[in-house]
Image 1 (spheres, helix red, strand yellow):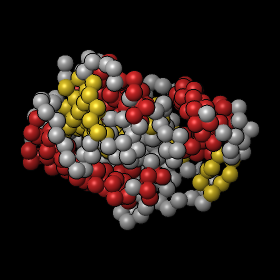
Image 2 (cartoon, rainbow, N blue to C red):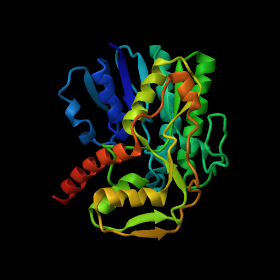
Image 3 (tube, rainbow, N blue to C red):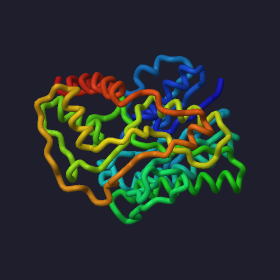
Amino acid sequence: MRRILITGGSGFIGSHLCRRFLDDGDEVICMDNLLTGRLQNIEDLFGRDFFTFLKQDVSEFIHVPGSLDAILHFASPASPSDFERFPIQILKVGALGTHKALGLAREKGATFLLASTSECYGDPEVNPQPETYWGNVNPIGIRGVYDEAKRFAEAMTMAYHRAHSVSTRIVRIFNTYGPAMRPDDGRAIPTFFAQALRGEDLTVYGDGSQTRSVNYVSDLVEGVCRLLDSDYALPVNIGNTQEMTVRALAERILELTGSSSGIVCRDLPPDDPKVRRPDISLAGRVLGWKPQVSPEEGLRTTLAYFEQEVSRAQG
């Protein structure tokens, strides 16, 4: 049995990781300050053996008694709507939080896995984006607080790997979706589902021609687990290569929900990426990984979740 700490463990992806490692027979310590994480994402885990929840801000302090085999650093607000609401917190958790988590990994002799992001590539000038691409990021733009926090976190992770021989992993996560997302998350899929189910028009920014490639959460979790079990220290893209326009995504969600809502266009936010698609050939070679869940299957499962969420909110 491994003993694993997951920071941001009550968030969207973190909660799925907590469940996966428990199911695999590991002991899980979930740490979260609940800034954007939700206890309802992990409430079914509180009665399970070998699960512990610690309400703690990793930017301020980290203390975990006993041994640790792995630390997965997933703490951070991650949606565009958070970039303006929590800019300082995002920068702090990317810098101070990563530093403290790496220090703990060094102290415990634990493997450290950083949740990085496709946002490191910014508004990319190459498509698809390989791990060797250095990115096109506006460091002082609204999105810069998240982009640069993650880029710094990657640099700090590699510094600990090189200077202190800490066993490290870096996963660059591309657009991921599925159950446990907040309806007010601000990203396209939860926003579209919530609007369609409430009978509101779907909000598309720009003309909707910008592209995204969306990856179902169970595929991401599998990729993270394989990366943790590997010995590969450099960044690895995990995402789906099936690219679609944002407008096509909105239209598909309207079809799935049977909603009579329309689509309205708003001004494109600054620095919004025009394309976003991973080159996953490295994940295939190093991890033997590729996505298994089709967008059709994943969106249907996600619809069932959002139907419950919207119904609960409406009473």
